[in-house]
Image (cartoon, rainbow, N blue to C red; front, side):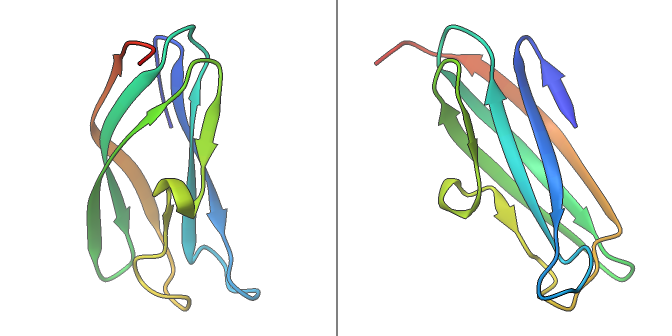
Length: 99
């Protein structure tokens, strides 16, 4: 989806009980040697609606984070909703200290 200076955001569609494209799981990967603070807005469209959510967090050097516990799972239209489009906007990645 997005890659900048050794940090990238990837996604997969998540299906609930055989339904297609009802959720999104994001993965934030940090290939740098410093921790990175990230901020972006997820934009998800169905055929009838648009849903946006700001996401912030931190990923340690040389690691990745993903899933619901990290705030990176979204099912904005319910298990029967169908996601038609996915995007990110207003992203920033800021290298932080090791503290």
